[in-house]
Image (cartoon, rainbow, N blue to C red; front, top):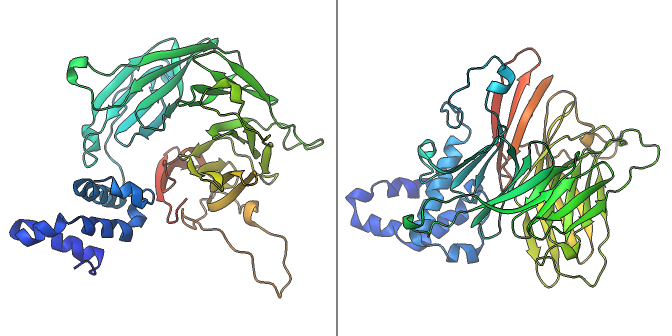
Length: 433
């Protein structure tokens, strides 16, 4: 029966109530392991043998059912409201509408919302098949401290949230435990202040790392800061200078940052750069006998990415190599939505590469993938995959976009220049990122 197509196996499984043998068959661990190997395209990421070995038969079954459910409903229109259900009555319409600055799933079973008005909500989703029945797990509100960044530690047990003071003079980091083993007698989970440090305009917190207790702050076009919120130790890192006479890159501001092992990955409007992480700031950063070089990848002059959405970082670290990878979803105002894969190699030889995975043109053809005229006897250049479809959405504005943790799914919000109605577009990327 294992040789049957997946669809037929699931059809057979639908008759469980009428057959004891079939009931026993669906509790056979080998069935669900076979289904996982055959249905890897619906899983957010591929699972290794060591990962599946730790899962029970019931957990494997739930994993497959959940993945199939998400795959079936992901591209369907959404009609339910969940976060913002009411608006405040005020003459100041601009400031009376609650705004969600960050919205993300954390630890697979929690939904985090960081509001522009200083509101933090964390929902716990007990049933993925009924997400709108989620319970409020943690809530926090302040008129003087506004949330700006978050990070889940490697173990998935602690969520850290960074806040900045309304007067931009200080930053604070709160943490909450997501461990479900605690008893109800200990009371509901709360956000605990773990550290506070001074900031100075125009510093902006771009990222935090809950494991290393580090905050990354963009400073100016010349440098950025790395701060340990527990010890208050900090370091200033000089940014790579623009090429002399390059008018396009005179403003090459930071859009996102991420710690990848011994490096800090910096996404800028025209470049992606990697800088060695100062080792004295955290006990989690080991001393190195070698000196790591700065690395740079430059986009074409006509491309400008003002914000990027990043996936989780993957890592290959063994005796022979140390490689970090992640996907990035970015938007260029004049050219469209772009999906990239960024690979940072530490060993055996330090290098940084950015590869295009797909593009959804929004206005004009992208010069990113246009080569110089070729001789007639040469084949045309390969066109990168287009996971978002091949339709050109002429003269479209994209106001927001986000990529899932593993790069398989994402969304963007857009409207045409002739309409104020915004459209939410969901997509599934067919290839692994």
